[in-house]
Image 1: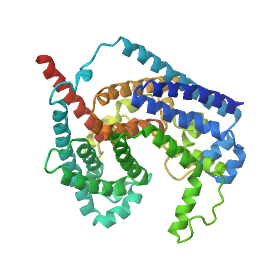
Image 2: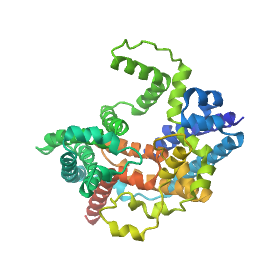
Image 3: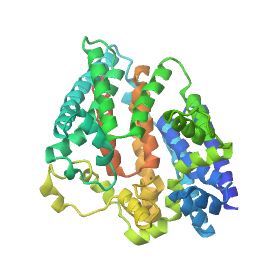
Image 4: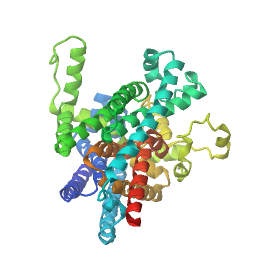
Length: 457
């Protein structure tokens, strides 16, 4: 019965999504809604096609174990919360359309109509890239020296970024700060890629920033962010050459969903020197379940949400006020932390629940709905939806007027939007996306300055 409710909700929300795509609505908010459907509606709808007890015993995955052991009341509650958020997002979308229809033309709409607008923007982004490269490059160099060379730094990457590992065991106070700042090398490449190559040093700086970015990603971020980095480059390249990126993404997802386990086995076979198709016995149903398993943790979080709240309590919006506590290294301003209320990150609470329940030994992110619920039940959920809807609307305005060469910035923002659903801890999101936030601030300032000059003339 509950599975049918998810299927009905899936039909309704997909209809709304297709309508948005046809009318070329806000890119970021459309991506956000699509990812919401994928994780919160499509995934439980597909899981409903399988026997919960069977998949829990067969796969031993913590999220499938929770799904298999969930009662009907747990599943109904998770559906009602999901339906409430879906209706809220659609409602906010309708309200935004009415407000946009009655809104006057803004400064952003007139950017690009005056000679020199885009050249001025290119120069500003190029100079920002140089600053990012200097900061991130020096920070990365300090890490290489402190950890005993590039090879040893890369070998320690998996250990240092493991959940619950104290960086103080491997890094000094300066090293901890450099670890945070080294992400700016990836920011520099985005800046050089987007800005037109009018400078003699452009090509050399682009290659240098790319090499340093790969070194940073291998050490400090792992496989996922590495794929994100090159995914942005690939999507931007396809967009600039007139390809329909949306259909490429859809086809790639369908292919991965239907072949995920088979692809993994083939890669392992090749790595072991065996024929690629050796012992390849996975059916389409097995492959689909493997993909859904990777998407299942937000739904799993909803199924045990009351238990997590009962064990750890609400955060009551403190994350919104003291987000900088995870962005600024604690060793940098140690005296400041004594004046800040002790507040455990929602992601930490979620991870601790899985670990103390003997379900997982690693970290589990706080998804969009779970994070909002931790801020204060339905009120916290409503506030979280409103805050991020407002943020997406504000960011979308400058993105709309950027030339095609800035597609890499747009797609990086799309991945940021993706993370709003999958890992919605505000302090961690700001920390992990600080450079793209700075780039958007620079773009905003440039547009305001150029349109201000236009009004004066």
